[in-house]
Length: 195
Image (cartoon, rainbow, N blue to C red; front, side):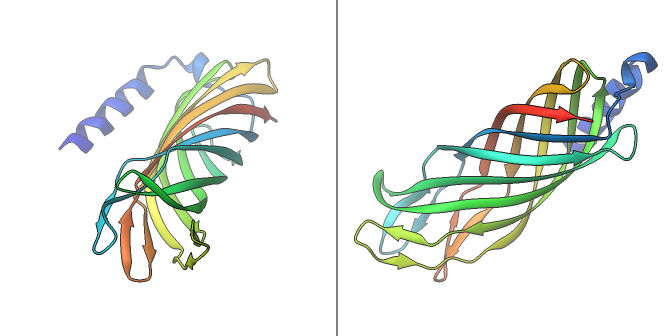
């Protein structure tokens, strides 16, 4: 029911935007910047800890969006960040997190000066090996998963923009039969070149 309410709200806002504000003059956007990744979940791992989780970390994100239609765009992005692995609050190792995200952006507000977009995301997540402090390594499995994204562009003339956004993924690490929920929330801030 909440999803239906959200869909009605988004469509209402989109229909309320004047036609003059609904025109953006670009079909491609290339962007890059910093990504703050905050895992929202943890898991109990039998024989290791009551709470195994990844730390909040800063990495980078690069990507591009192609807008073949006025209000719809396809965004492809790559994030690279390394997290500490913590067991009951103690760092026991490190893991790499490098998802490749494909998002269908619906531009609710679509102008050169300000744009707001939301959409579903499909991701292929490459979890690196867990590199333990004692020198051992634990293999992990990559995964395909889904999430949701939202973002804004603040135009600086026709070609440049400041970009920001949030993305959430339903993601977990599967390491040697143990699954640790991560559910990362990304916050990005960067710059874009539009043409």
